[in-house]
Amino acid sequence: MSTHSPQLDAATERRIEHSLERREQPLERSEFLGTLVFAVGFVVAAVALAVLAEASRELSVPLALAFVAAYAIADRIEFSTGAGYAVPSQLVFVPMLLLLPTPLVPLLVAAAMVVSVLSGAVGGGAALGRSVLAVSDAWFALGPAVVLVLCGAQLPEWAQWPAYAAAMAAQLFVNAAVFAARARLREDKLPLRGVVPEMALASRVDLLLAPIGLLAAVAAAERPAAALLVLALIPLLIGFEREREGRIERSLELGRAYRGTALLLRDLLEDDDEYTGHHTEDVVELSVSVAERMGVDEDTLRATEMGALLHDIGKISVPDEIINKPGPLDDEEWAIMRLHTVEGERMLQQVGGLLSSVGVVVRASHERWDGGGYPDGLAGEAIPVAARIVSACDAFNAMTTDRSYRKALPLDVAIGELRKNSGTQFAPDVVAALVAVVTDGAEPEWELGIAPAPAASADPARTPANASRGV
Image 1: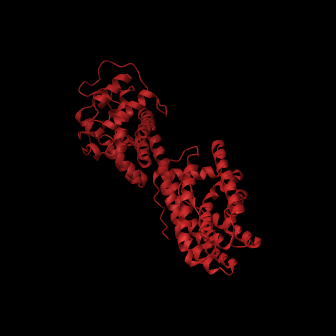
Image 2: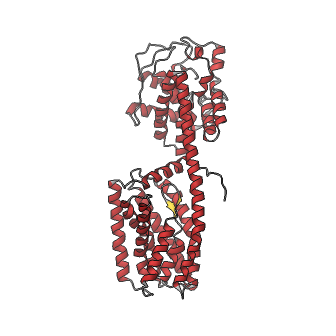
Image 3: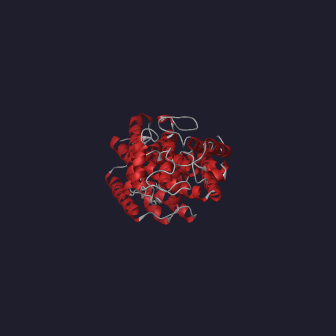
């Protein structure tokens, strides 16, 4: 297997980190109550199946206990998918369905999952209260058990393959439905679009391992305990799990390192120029609010946040006498100032990785929607979405705060400038979202820094929307 760290998108990275934190914490009260309802519903349905359905095999307690233990072992092997994880339980679950009394299997699976959770809690890996979560997770076992009972296909026979296929489909359907419903009970209310890719990965693992479990069940039809030989695969799967989880953790650590580097660069910029540092913090908060208002994907949201954080980092190379000059800049000084986006991209490319892609946003943060910006004269959709957001938020914050060369503009005047320059300097959809954020108090709250303003810009040759050093 590859030793390179997987490239995690922002959404998956966030969900994995959140999932790791959640596993060490008790469930929120609302989620616990909702999960308890699912758990009670499962127990009622599983008991009804066990009592009302006729089994094709007699119960062997030692064999059942052996399978419960085997399932608990397999259930401890977890491959992170984001908010959840995939487990290689099909290796044991399929033989359980066909070699034990089928109507009892859902209850036995639930017992095995509780054992798995409790063994993890003893080792410090999970909270004891999450045993109720394990019971609600066992819903997936009901679908295939019911199908096999209804089809009279409780014994391992190749001729019953259509019933086995239907049972697999029932498992995937029930598992997806319950996972999606339970995701809505969570505090972060994981949206359906976030559930689908994760369920696809977990389902792929189930589909790939189910034939191996079926082969073991058919081969052990006369000697059911022989199916437990599939446990010989467990050490191999544990090795795969540790390698994959290690690569994911390295990727998460690298992401944290990039964020730490970005914050360090921001602090360096603030030490070099206190105003620019505070301005950057305001632009970050405003940019994130606007990006969320626009409903961008999480990769774009991350690029917006980090692009806003570092959009002025190239100003470290600009002489202080230009940055803090009280009057208008001359042509030579503007030529130097406008190099800060190129310098910012160069600095971030030297760091590499995630910050290299952020450098693209920094370089384009002073492009104009009509193509009249710099350094590359990009126009319209050619400008990265994150850069369009940062550009408008940067200009708005510059207009509504005191600068060394002019006083702040009132809020209504700044909004008027945004609207006047919509479709020329700024992207129209960004202006609409920005105006919505600053006029209705959308969270997160941020500081406008508004002060009394003169009737006109300190530099009449430039519009207020352009009155920012670097714009």
